[in-house]
Amino acid sequence: MEGIKFKTIRKIYFRLLSLGYSDYSSYDSGWRATVSGDSYENDNSYASANIINVGGSYAQTHSIYPSGDEDWVKFYAYSGNTYTIETFTAGGTDVDTVIELYNSSITFITSDDDNGEGRFSKITSWSCTSTGYYYVKISGYGGSSTGDYKIKVYQP
Ligand SMILES: [Ca+2]
Ligand SMILES: [Ca+2]
Ligand SMILES: [Ca+2]
Image 1 (cartoon, rainbow, N blue to C red):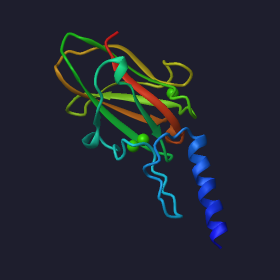
Image 2 (image 1 turned 30 degrees about the vertical axis):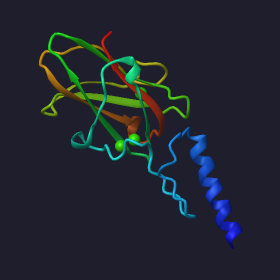
Image 3 (image 1 turned 90 degrees about the vertical axis):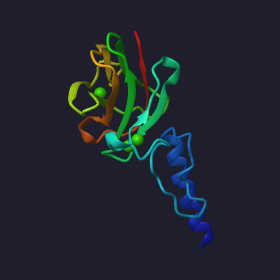
Image 4 (image 1 turned 180 degrees about the horizontal axis):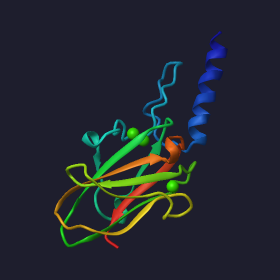
């Protein structure tokens, strides 16, 4: 019986590996595994958005998992500056991202599906006209695509 349980754990563990997960903090040391996606969860609404600093070196690695997952990040932008918001491969299983940009009142500004590499999203040279926090919602295309991605916000 113990042997059967152990095999089940290893199967889930290797599934996580194959998805490119580098964070096993959600992995239950008991024989039940809890798959909960990336280490930034729960970030499924603007109210729980994580801050992402502006600059290519501040790229964050996330995943869209499970199916239907949404990730929200926010960045501080200054009026008069332009910003590029880009998702790109994390080296694992790529998700087909869709990104949406909102202002601090969660009013929709713009969105993109596939302007980045492959099926990744990129909002290029968005001009900020009001200083404050801006929110980015990242989801999987059609609400069904899952996998890993990186995101960065930078001044082009
Ligand atoms: Ca996620
Ligand atoms: Ca999420
Ligand atoms: Ca896409």
